[in-house]
Amino acid sequence: MNFVKEPKQRVLDERLETRAIEFHGHDGPFMTLGLRMGLAALELLDCRGWFDLRCEVRLHWSPPDSCVIDGIQSSTGCTMGKKNITVVEQPGVEAVFTSKGKILTIRLRENIIDNIKQNITDEDIPHEMIEELEGADISEIFDITLVN
Ligand SMILES: [Zn+2]
Image (cartoon, rainbow, N blue to C red; front, side):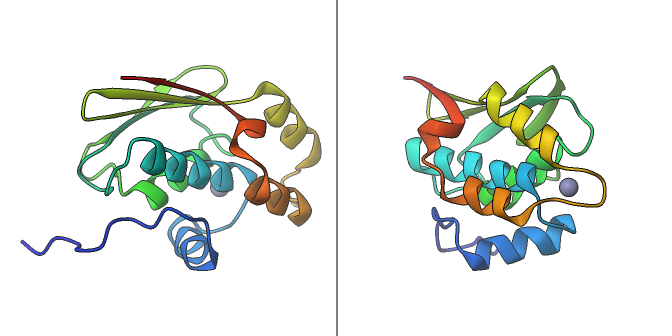
């Protein structure tokens, strides 16, 4: 088998964003948040990506919320095809990553969800909002718990 040699990149740059948009079909706040959740997981769990990480995404499994799932798949390499990402229907937006005995929970803050829902419509997603979410400190948008 040919395995990818380089670890998954850990920064949100244009290359990753472009690949994610190509995979998912459009950009948007929830996909951006999924990318950031996945990147935070690679960093905090010190993972290569693809095989050394599992993810359970817990959310309302319907767009736009569920666009988070494709952001996580794009940034971590956890995929439906490898069955190392699963989805559980639940209110809110949360992802539980496990690797090497560690459990990392990243929960999107309620105020961020409310703010997005108030500002997007089917036709329009304010681009400034996506840029803000790309640049925000992770502690401002997520509640993060790491258990060793
Ligand atoms: Zn979407």
